[in-house]
Amino acid sequence: MRQRDGLRFFSSPVSNGQMTRLLTIQALAHRAVSLWGKTGRQSAAAKRQRADFYKVAWREAADSLEADLETLDQDVLAIRKGGKSTRVFLNYTELDDPVSLRIAGNKPLVHRLLRSQGIPTPAYREFTLKTLADAGEFLQQHGTCVVKPAAGTGGGNGVTTGVQTVRQLRQASVVAAGHSSSLIIEQQIAGANIRLLFLDGQLLDAIDRRPPTVTGDGRSRIGQLVENVNQQRLQAGFSVAQSVLKRDQDMRQTLAAQGLTLTSVLPVNKTVQLKTVINDNTAEDNICVIDSLNTALIDEARSAADAVGLRLAGVDIVTPDASRCLTDAGGVVLEVNSAPGFYFHYAARNGRTPVAIPVLAACLNCPIDSGAWKVREDASVSRDLCEVTSTR
Image (spheres, rainbow, N blue to C red):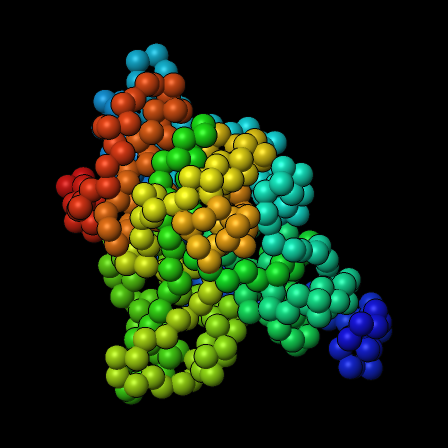
């Protein structure tokens, strides 16, 4: 495995160049299927519902600030208050400049920036399909790993966890390469996956995002249960989830780690974890933990946002103990996200925080009392935001 020629790494009678071309073709084919296959069509429908969520969230924020909202082009909105104005597109705002957005989208660069400030990040190595043997050496050294695109993606797209073997590494790399030619392999860290949302250094909210699960009925295969869940999500709209469950490599790996496949039949009421990448979870899987986080941990996450240079940042951490700082607990900062999504904060088991309100206030340079919005309401996203939708 440590040999750098394609023959030794893959135990196949082809040259390294031939193997690279073959894997590149597989990556493109995999990407095409993910876009235009059944899951791709379902994802497109969910994407439309996600866009509806942002329209409602921005409308609510504009009404709260007594600002005027105008639809410029489908999902592009102009919001005005007095002589000030701003434009938004889904979760994108005018708060951060293009260079900062570019930096935040470059995962290896973010790792380097954070490490220069003493902020813990997972061990990692950059590679491409051509230098897959480098990733193989890293895998041997660090055991269970995560493979992901190094740049240009979000929402967990192209990410595979639980990589432990050469075969799994190759499969995960093909998936990631469908999104970016530059790849990254990271040591996988166990613990809670928490998103901290910062605006100009102020912590707006913190959500423990649990992975998606499915419960058996004693008859259906897991693949059919996933399909049933996806149909339910599409029928319910964003009140339940912002995406459908993607049958990707991460799902297969997560199931395999439990001795299961998509063809396995679960006993009645048996619940299993479907994925380790959390982006396809539901509102019920999100829990606000802002009041239970260690102060030093919050400072570490805030420093991560500052290191990247973002005003509005979603800092993702993984830690085995959120009551301690990352350094002491063995936790890490996974990513610093520009244009972070709002959905997790509106859709949580223990209420919602309407973060679009302070974000819009910052866009309009409009002072706002935190007491006017920083309250986790008991109303669920389905009872509140969806009622707003039905009245329009």
